[in-house]
Length: 436
Picture 1 (cartoon, rainbow, N blue to C red):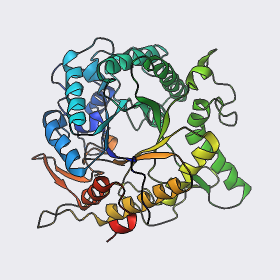
Picture 2 (picture 1 turned 60 degrees about the vertical axis):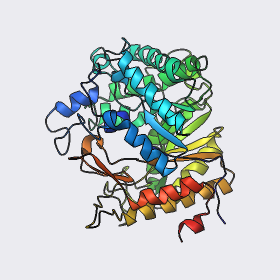
Picture 3 (picture 1 turned 135 degrees about the vertical axis):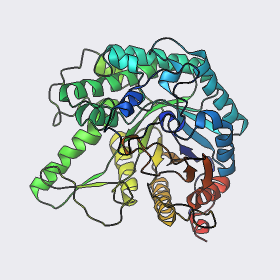
Picture 4 (picture 1 turned 60 degrees about the horizontal axis):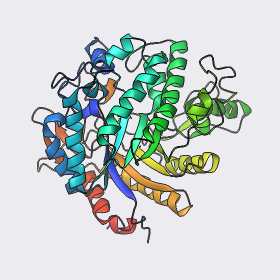
């Protein structure tokens, strides 16, 4: 019977900008995503996150949902502009909100897992230079210390940055995300400063909290489309730019030479700071890429989510094993895993999201396979607790295991939520029993 360890951290994840709303309340400042949403044509459906899931006003109800699920842990992010509206000045009401949330989680027996930066940089900091500017490194450390001095006595795990690849590449190279720039040099500077600020923050936070400290990367296992040398070379190039560019410096190897031979933004001592030891690595996994010459991903299967991403659970085991064998982090968490499907409530009110149930079940199996193989996988966080504002996709994609009616803010647990509840409440429940 396939059982998970008794201390396995089963949980769900969200991010502040995607669910909180209340963007102009209690002293919150503007973020780069507020500005981005206000620019015509940036968001697919022309929407914004001004209300989103109204979590700011419904936090007690959402914590009750977490209790109902039986979640052992909850990964959520701090809204940087809510805590420091201008990037430097502390807003006590913003800190109070997260203080109350952490207290409610602890009272419910749920371990708080805090992400400090889930993309919502204060607009004031961006106006002063943003991530391409080295001063933002110091602003982030200042912010991290402020938050952990308030919350660090109760928080179990802390993530410095969520998916720095998305911030630097989608935000500064492709222009798909805030701040919507297309400048390779600024993207390169942003990526380095994100990693550098991570290292500085980990060093600073050791004095503020006993929580586990780490970072969360979105990693994509890459496979060549064929055995041709051209496809093999293209696959290695993709892996270098997407995965190794972040993994290598974090684990003391510097930037991979086949990706960037002479990094113009690295100063003396930077690489040592980036490689500051951490307690865990968080991995966000959604799909794999099959690469052919030219760097294009090949469509292998018609089994895709609403994001157009292939459903491929073996890729989760593959990336966990690769990271364990090549980098050996002390502990690994699947910090995000989930799928977008639009399944709506039926006439009886039930949301029969069979595709998501199948997606999650197969990925739970892959996680168990990793544990059996000796990989130090310590937890699994389903993305996401709620349907929410899906960045540039607006409200057109639904990742939640709980349906949200945006007009009424009603929450309806989907069949996938009931699946998660069974495994989270039992924790050691065998996967075979889940299927029954």
